[in-house]
Amino acid sequence: MKNQSDPTGQYKKNRSRLKFHSGIAVLIFVFVVVLVYAAGVIGKSFNKTQIPVISVKYDVISVSKAFDGAVIRDEIVYASPSGGTLEFLVNENEKIKKDAAVLRLKDAGADPVEADLESLNRDLFDMQKKRGPISLFSPDVERINRQIKTLVDKNIYKLINADAADIYALKESIENEMNLRNQIMLSENKGAASPLLNKKENYEAELSKYVTDVRAPVGGVISFYTDGLEGEYTFVEKENLTREQIKAAPPGSFGYGGKIVKEGDAAFKIVTSNEWYIAAYIENESADGIRPNEAKTIYVETDAGYANLETVVYSVAKGEKESYVLFKMTKYMLDYIDARNVRFKLNDSVHRGLKIPATAIVDRTFLKIPVEYIGEGNRVTKSGEERDETVSVSPFRNGTDADEGYVYVSLDVGRLNLGDTITAPGCPPYVIAKTASVKGIYTANDGVARFREIHEDFPVAAGGYCLLDPVKNPGVRTYDRVVIDASNVTDNQIVN
Image 1: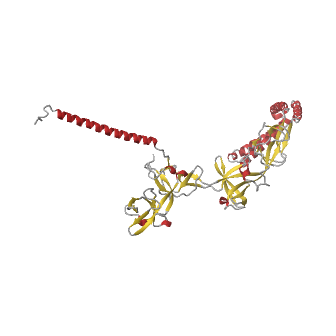
Image 2: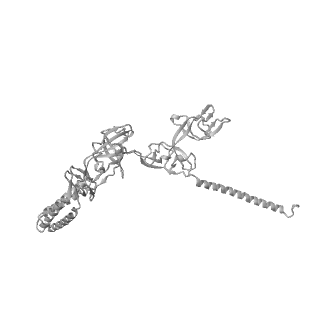
Image 3: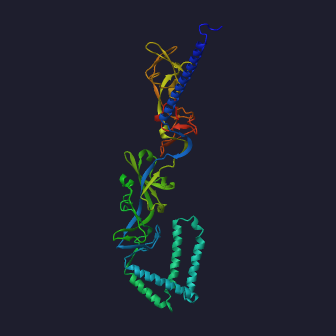
């Protein structure tokens, strides 16, 4: 039936408009709420503190402590007798005999005479080679050439694995043969060669006025490297070096051909013995197992890693906190002939395990609660002034053998604290007064920080990492995401 009071139906039209506008208002309100929520989430994501994580890997690290050592050799430094230009007649690290010519000192006047003599020697050598078979000494020259070839043929394959001493021995043999052959060829005073030989003698006499040959007063191994400390680090003082001397890093200098020196400058040194020492101050805890006269392998730091060095412990002088230890060697002196300072380890402690940063490890405190006070559903009844309160807890684990009968529970400030009183049916009130410290890390595999107990097996190594034994740490696995800095995270925190 038509409404008599609204014959035009205006009332119904107004009512429909009102419903329409109300619906739009509701939609706008919902949209605004969603927009504000989204803005808050986005804002939080931008302002959220980034918590770095790292993936656990199975790796190898060295955890041995390295010590500073000083090298002591039986060495003598020889000064230049006059100023001039150095010209070495032997090679670096070559073994020489007493009175062997080591170097030649030339002043400026020697240069033009030496150039003329070198040119004359070339002319003489060419002339003698052309004479060939008619030379009186041609059989001798041919014999020496054959000897040189035989020396090279016999030793060519040995050079692959030869040490420096073998190489120098072969070099010296070849040079001696070549010098003998050249002297023979240049000494035949016959025919056209006579005037040139006479002229050669005159040049040599003139050159001797500007050149001084320096000879070795003792035999040994020659080195052009000197550091100015050869007079302090001696066999006489080998048991008396100070800590400062052990750690001192001398600048050192290296002689070379063509170097201009003044009178008194260090020219070279001769090491007279294969016996040498390394002196070091070692903390008593590490030195306790070191005994005099016992064989000891140490591991010396090199550019390629750590090299084994066989030693004999010469002496151990124990102090209040450190021991002065002297290691003696009779081999490999050439490898350390230009070294004064070394870094070494007493053992080659390389370990394998799960590698984690030391900063990821944290000590966390747990409340110790007797197991009988943990109710069904891991609930604890806490006594209050007005009424008791039931608190849900997350037991971390049961106590150790020494804590048998206890459960470790997270300290939850505001809900369950040290000093709270808890009750249980048939048990007297118990005041929480005991805590336990547990070492662990935070993993974040699902984006949530979760504490995992660990057992450290090795101390922190160089680089700030340590290793975990997988067998003793079943809660940590390869490729776990571990929070790098445990001080920046709490349990159940969201981790990016």
